[in-house]
Length: 274
Ligand code: SF4
Image 1: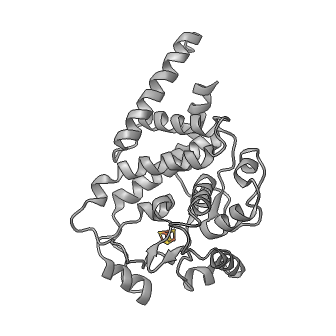
Image 2: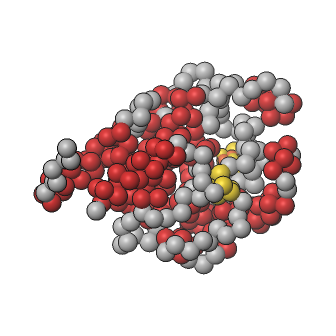
């Protein structure tokens, strides 16, 4: 038997409750298990920001919310006593980083806003040059010929405050094991799996909000994306209007997020928003 239709008043209450749940999760962080109500609440909250037309930087702000959610969610992992990651260790910073468009805009705004301050030591010409160099390589050459991320400054992340989800969620139990794996191709990086899983969950929720808003969920290589966003006038506004400002930029047609979960949450968001 079909469910009876709900009234407008009931729908408003469901929306309100969902947003309230989302605020609580944003303040507290996600757990290890995927809980649909919690995931929907926080993704709906991100969607509301992403579609708030009064905010010109709403895509970057949506990425900032995802970033806050991930940091809260990973508090247990980042405070592990045997965490191997520390400032000055950058063995993992030679892998290709693929992220979402909102994360790219967040980094591009930060670079512009801090051009005479915290970002002044970042060589933007090197970011553009490295993006072009990587683009010319074959996928195998890209994988084997790892080169340091041009956003590194003195072996530390130059955009640490706004680094994208893949960089935030990659934690290791041993920097020596990372060195061996990256420099000598020996052994494996002892990654902290719960942190990676939480990164995956948060990215899935950000992408669910992006696709529910009818925007492109294509993955974009970090350096090339930042170079394109900086070189394109009004890049964020144009992307929000549906323009492919990352045309030709290295990336992936769809991110390797949990696609089923992304599509499911996006569908629920559309229902709530209707
Ligand atoms: S953005 Fe920062 S953390 Fe990520 S690869 Fe580049 S330097 Fe490393």
